[in-house]
Length: 302
Image (cartoon, rainbow, N blue to C red):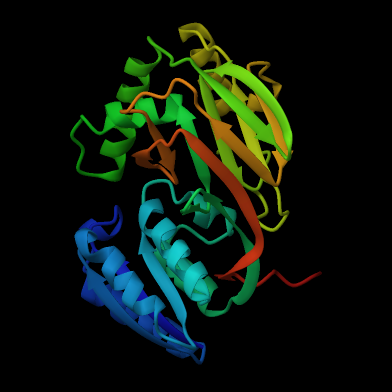
């Protein structure tokens, strides 16, 4: 196996590391398992260009080292180029890596990938944008917009900023009208938040998919949240009991169309945690088995 790795030196974990030494370690680990690995260490502003160049190569695995934004960009390029993707978790939450069961400690992640296998999983699109974790509108984009006005220089600083932004956002939960068509069935609702995940969320505390090859979107709708109900929802998420919260409806589907009749020009959505402009009409689809990823080998059956 030939691997071309792109490491985002501005990613959360990488900021405080000797990246040249880490790149040598990565090469040694893959060579130990009979593979070759070449790496590039690039600044965050250059990451997409570097990933695009690496994805254009044939007969190799594209490895992306960084946070969820870096990994999401890499997944889109790998899918379009038809090359396998390897995920090295170096961000704050590493949600996609967690779904892939990749260890979060970097050397352990390298070892697991070097001895891993290629697996076909699902990838989703919202109009022309791809995502591997989640598309969200309403409360989450509002909170992230507030968080981005705060300063932070580390993973823990980012988490603290997220908590402060949440505290500000709960005072005025958004409400908006949306017309939905879910697998061909139309409905209309006034909601505070909609999240659409690339495969349904699992039973754990974090909102991540346990498996990524079910071929179904998870659609999570929170209607008319008040400050109190937002607080209760956050508490149930932290306790891992959010499925019992009556303010959240879960629907499984392969496709959903969203129409916002009263959309404001400044309205935002998030795709894999990154703010994007929200369009008046959004079609979200899952593309079953179309993304190939390098995952840890399954443990032997005892």
